[in-house]
Image (cartoon, rainbow, N blue to C red; front, side, top):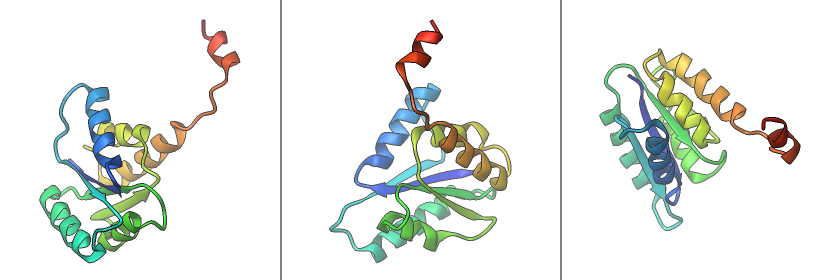
Amino acid sequence: MVGILIIAHASYGEALVKSASHVVGHPLVRVMHLGMSVREDPDQVLGTAAEMVRQLDQGDGVLVLTDIVGGTPSNIATLLAVPGKVETIAGVNLPMLVRTLTYRDQPLAVVVQKAISGGQEGVLHLVPEAHDAQR
């Protein structure tokens, strides 16, 4: 089972984990989150994140999800990357996390692709006409 680490600004990662647990209907295992504030030392956060990756990796790899490309959390996530062992994806959202959880028993490369497609397919423009047509 692929481990999952979310590194994000403030409490966004924690909120995603709680929301995903609600959606799937049970507590999440081998999922951790690390929130960052502007006052934290990135080097110290990197050390904490690296330790979390070690804890999460039980041989199937770890997927690190982060919020905004170019932000400190994504920069730290990028430093953790080890192709084929620790992969990173930016732009994390709830559909991405739920899709990741659904496929995490697959090889890491498959989980990466499923996470990206889940995140992309979960972003839709909702208009009243489409809602009315489904009634």
